[in-house]
Amino acid sequence: MTANDVSTSTDHGTVLTGTEAHIEATEKYAAHNYHPLPVVLSEGDGAWVVDVDGKRYLDCLAGYSALNFGHSNQRLVAVAREQLGHLTLTSRAFFNDKLSGFAVALARLTGKDMILPMNSGAEAVETAIKVSRKWGYEVKGVPAGQATIITMEGNFHGRTTTIVSFSDDEVATSGYAPFTTGFRRVKYGDIASVAAAIDDTTVAVLFEPIQGEGGVVMPPEGFLTELRALCTERNVLMVADEIQSGLARSGRTFACDHEDVVPDIYVMGKALGGGIYPVSAIAANHDVMDVITPGSHGSTFGGNPLAAAIGTEVVAMLEEGTFQARSTEIGALLEAGFRPLVGRGLSDVRVRGAWAGIDIDPTLMSGRQMSEALMARGILAKDTHGSTVRFAPPLVASDEDIAGLVAAVAEILAG
Ligand SMILES: Cc1ncc(COP(=O)(O)O)c(C=O)c1O
Image 1 (cartoon, protein in one colour):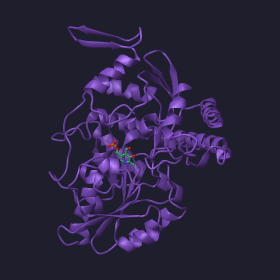
Image 2: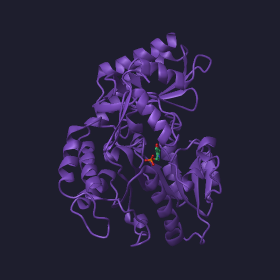
Image 3: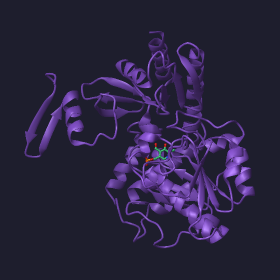
Image 4: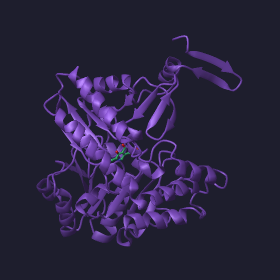
């Protein structure tokens, strides 16, 4: 501990001061299910955060894209504060006066007939899986208990036991067997593999239009269009997990928009709660969503008035289109800055909107080392899969912020 690090016991609990004291207490009393960078944040405004020692950082992770609209976004904070003074939770045993507006707004944004609100992203994915299976049995006529869902290699859809059942990440799955059956994994972006895996039991293809945790990996151009056609032809639901790729991150409202493709089910989360509150949902048309009947699915907090008020404002902001436009502008800066570094420390760069994955030459350094070097320069980002670092700054980041990021990466690679 440094001189700044103090742990004081009071009648109301323990007051901790200083980076090391916070880290020590967190490591001691909270499970080690993450390996955070050694920074303790206490304030956030726009694209910037401040740690307990007063040091400022550009946040290039943005809560894994939950903070697309920036920290402490004034419009969202105002709506949340206002709603806190009225009503926060009703459960779905009763109606509330905010879910109605949220449902109308999100249905309009997605172009779908209905939404089903939940809380975390994983719950929304679970919801999409349940709806797809029920649709398979009741509408498509798949024999009871035989429904299969096609998933992709390298996927990340959350952490529940069913969701990790179709993950190919050793760390995410090890020790959690037995797994849920009924999933077939195929090569990401390979339409022939998807086609070959579909049979009469197949109810859905679940995919990320851009794989975020995978390192901002995009399918080949035309894949989304081909997948749409294939799903229609084979009577299979196209289920797009837009939890990380959606809501302006990729430069469009949804990543599927890049090919003007409309899936049967949109799965949304993260930024839907504006980085303030967990809000997730799926959206689909009546032919799919009508399989859900009272008691067949639910959540105590799903669709609560606080979540719905924030979500409604998020949709209003997205309907204005400015965040999508800014995301595209940031993407152009990231592309122009990172592309020349390929061959000079980077082996690959992938950019779509304000979302970049850089692959570092592993003989130079690991992704973790790059993240630590960036942190020392006042930039927070997160590595994934060894030598990859992804950047997803809040969409309120300035041109200077992005220039600072690019310059820092170039400087670190140059040694
Ligand atoms: C594409 C995708 N789906 C689902 C999830 C799970 O969301 P949550 O962590 O809110 O459960 C994530 C989280 O990173 C994600 O990126």
